Amino acid sequence: MLKKLKLYIHSSKYQILRFLAVGVTSLFIDIGLLIFLIERINFRPVVAVATNQLLVILYNFIVNKYWSFSSKKIPFRQLIRYLILVAFNYVTSITFMYIFNDIFHIKYTLVRLSTIATLFIFNFICYKHWVYKET
Image (tube, rainbow, N blue to C red; front, side, top):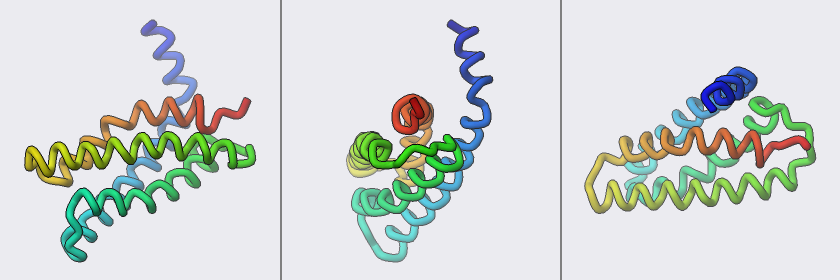
């Protein structure tokens, strides 16, 4: 099992690095917009995360499709699968913000960073083997 995991990581290393780069830039967009919406526009954190996800979703789909996974397929089927994954991430993000910020009063930026880190590996596998799968 460990050997298969190492082989998988090795064979996917460039995709993983690109996916990570997209993730890091998305993180800056995500957190920057989140802070702006909360600190400058006075949105509640749960409303701000619901709002900022729309921009991050669009950015992620386009950049991962063409750069991280070099997908050439017509995007309709990919877009549907992507939106299903996004819906899961969206609900998870809002739920985590509500539980950990509204109920447990953990700082919203820490909640958001933790949510993103938690979903990273799950999302890479879904992108590679389901959303942007070429065959």
